[in-house]
Image (cartoon, rainbow, N blue to C red; front, side, top):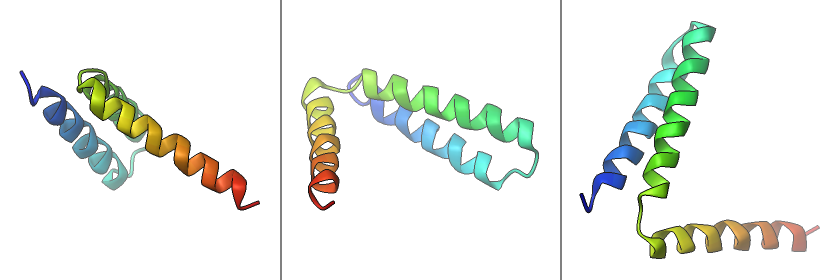
Length: 69
């Protein structure tokens, strides 16, 4: 159970990659939404330290973007 979040994240990434290769629009929307939900489940099940690190990187990147303007 310790690495289940990596499996969920990997399935989500593979699903989104598959969606980008499909030409049919309805299937693409369904696969991208399914992949995004799966990636969110993987993020929610990840350890708190990893969640804090991802949040810090995303906030830091936003701060650098705002500061460069």
